[in-house]
Image (tube, rainbow, N blue to C red; front, side, top):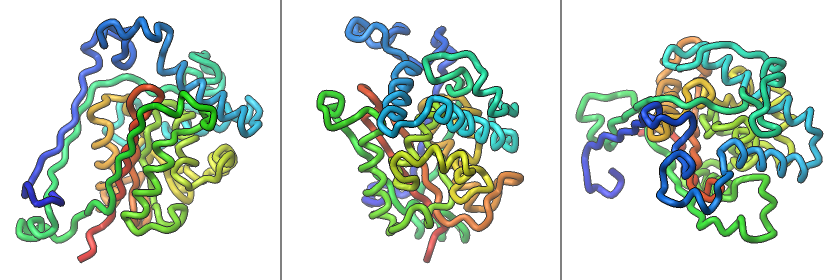
Length: 301
């Protein structure tokens, strides 16, 4: 669109994870990736992100109970939001105590700290403001920023990375804010959908997005800063916790929620007067070395 190569495009994401015959995401141990399972035979997604949680707690000297309670708040908050969303796959309230008492999958991550696996699809039609106006559209949202950060994974081979956060998100978010003209994301961002494959992922992302200070996301989460009625609501549609993670569809699902919110069409979970919505995704190997961030808002003529 921006280059002028095309006038109208359809973006589509879809995933049928339930057809793989495997309970988790596609990975080398589930029959995907040729012989790559021999490189790291014990690698699992919960195990990897549990190491993130342990590294974060060690760096900032956070007691195990405090970290677990903050992660439990993340999950319970998202389930509360998902209750208000008829498109969410998992619409069931869970309490912080229930999350903390759930079976451990990979310490300190319990069952309710992990997102589910699901099928799903999402699509969007994208065009330029000029064409949108010609089509009779008078009230539409526009992309304020779109950034992508890649890493070769070199951070895992050196000592200057503590394994407590995502370097790609840290850098990508700064570029996204610069492109969108945002100088204070804590004040300017109205709502967020981030990659909450595990509750700890959402927690450290709050800091990588430069909204919570380093080591302070636990406090902000427990204070309700990211709740639906908080300062910067996060996972306002229920997130991966309530939709599962049909990988190809997740990013567009996040943008769809921002679109609804900016149009005032989110019903019971509607945020008052949203200005900018941010979406964030992680992926890749080793250790999530790809990050994409989008910022959208109402179109300003």
